[in-house]
Image (cartoon, rainbow, N blue to C red; front, side):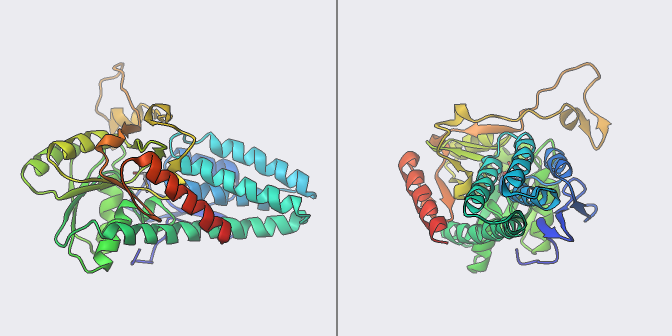
Length: 359
Ligand code: MRU
């Protein structure tokens, strides 16, 4: 992000500090969370959201569990961290970055404990490891953004959905990382942001952070996308992802699948921006991706006012799955993956494992 006057998630004042995304753009307020239950609730309540940002928050949450544990032995510390990991794993089911970050932190702790470190040394080093994970996430987004910028022509009008920006990551963003990468490469771009019913991540968050960076952005309601594509006012679509299956099927915010179909019908490129931590080799295809169902009030109310008659049911899948055949490319920090995705994504995951083993 070029505007560094704000942050999404960091360790600050012995706490997990989060910008409260529920109240943007009206108010910029940071919460400092000092116990794991508060961190888990913050993820559930969408104080922080977006797959990589959830992963970063969970990593810092486990470090917080270690800091606040009274354990005197490495074994007792590992047990306390395991309890915290189980609670954090129950927050949101779709974004695989959550489970990736929990696994990485627990793996690190198990290795360090086996290496003979004391409980106090583990506590200190685990915090450093979690902070490194957040810093890495920002660097990964920058690499992804630079790789994706090559797909963005000068003057491009880009349609995006939800918020896959600095607010959804450690910083810089994935889909919006590509927008930023294109701007940094000297291209003039403008963004149409879907408002993204029901939580309005596009209207409230994408518009807020692009505006802070002085990148031209206009908000449209979700049902306007076809109109603007039909009118020739969109050149390409870029979205983020919560989980990419091994075959390239993509789970992302509800409404993404519809956009992919529209892009296909209008012969427009449909790009997915996703770091390797969002690619799940253990999920073979989209059907196997768990889709989070959220509460009634997010659909049945608008600004705390009821918009659905009492007693009438609502449906609320928070994500949908776009089949790989509608995806033009998946942009990762290791480059641009194209079909067949089972082959290209597997190669990028190998590259990712090699680079993290070397760091
Ligand atoms: O429910 P949310 O706001 O967590 O959903 C977020 C999205 O769908 C994002 O597009 C996705 O996590 C990618 S973030 C880089």
